[in-house]
Amino acid sequence: MGLGKLLHNHADHAEHDHADAGGTIDYPRAYELFVSIAFAGGRRAAFTRLAAAGRPRAGDRVLDVGCGTGYLSRILSRAVTADGHVTGLDPSPAMIGYATRHAPSNCTYVLSEGQAPPFPDGSFDLVVSSLAVHHIPADARPEALRQMFRVLRPGGRLLIGEFRPPRNHLAQGLIGLFTGPAMRHSPRDLLGTMIPDAGFQVESEGELPYLLYYVHATRP
Ligand SMILES: C[S@@+](CC[C@H](N)C(=O)[O-])C[C@H]1O[C@@H](n2cnc3c(N)ncnc32)[C@H](O)[C@@H]1O
Image (cartoon, rainbow, N blue to C red):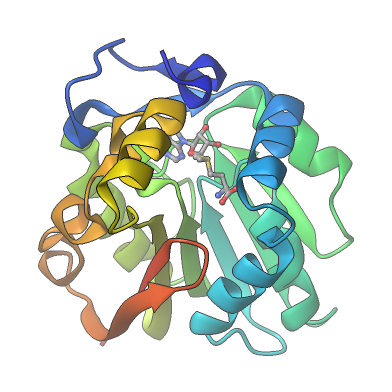
């Protein structure tokens, strides 16, 4: 069992491949420690680059799906300024509690699932989701993408960030050992055609430092 798996509450306790990698994370302080160590001091730089790929603007209303401890939300909260607002969503009460305790004044957090966000159509200018799509149960991922589309206003932007496995096989095996199956697979395989199938137009995608991969898309 990998260290990452100890933090997870897997939906079905199966560990076959990324299709079964869904589940909440219920130990926010352990998660923070784990991620800080995994990024070896580069987490701030990595997430700042990732946030920039979503092109946040002052005044934006942002939704962070699978926000976890709210790390990316807090970075985005500065980019959208006091005129904007970031709403984080996660099904783990422990994660929502942690994020709420650390929230700047323009961030709020909601207990919910990505496949059933409790917001009216067109509520957001930007929807982001970092390292979370692989946590949504496989059969609910297409619906989660459709919901991201629904809650974005026309012309709104989507940013999905996921891990990409290292090219080196030894490093790939080590990462898989510690983090579980989702991070041994290509994010392109994970996402497939879900983003365009939900109605989005993909604008750009690619690799970022620190084994991150992003897709930036718009709602036409
Ligand atoms: C690896 S963490 C990523 C947290 C944060 N976005 C980050 O980048 O640090 C994945 C998160 O997805 C959440 N999650 C699990 N199932 C979900 C679902 N159905 N919808 C939305 N988020 C979910 C977990 O509880 C966890 O907080």
